[in-house]
Amino acid sequence: MPSTFSVFYDGQFWVGVLEITDGSFVRAARHVFGAEPTNAELEEFAIKHSGPLFDRALAAPAVPAGTRPTATVNPKRLARMAAREQAARPLTSAAQDALRLAHEQAGHENRAAAKRRRAEAAEQQRAEAIRKRKAKRRGH
Image 1: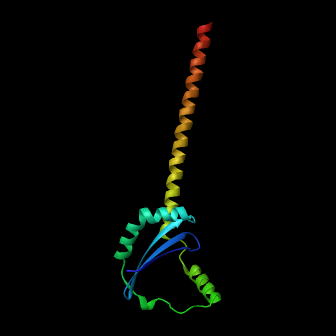
Image 2: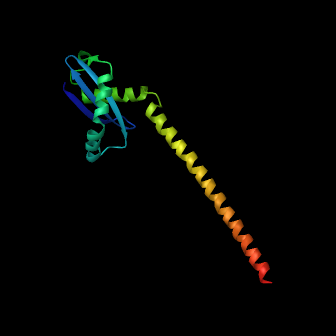
Image 3: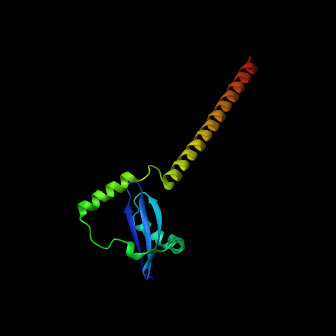
């Protein structure tokens, strides 16, 4: 079973797509990298995560390979088609939602930790003031 792994920028994230060709059918799985992956990151991904990606691709429904475009397309026409597809995409995707939720959760955790630190600092400041006040009273 020949397979290809392509990495491309979809306008928002860097995405890797694994295509497995089995006779006249194609199965595919994708992995969202987020930022542009370096060669070292791609090599590490291939070593550590290629197995689960192959499993997902093999579990995906098979699509007849004949439905894939085989003719070359004028580059300008291809750019126009890509621009139309980008305009037709929904504003949010599952990956965007996951990233947004993770960012919000980290923000909530950071705010809670900062509030705890402020409360601890205020408590220490009050304790220091009481200690100084007592020391001053004992000095008289």
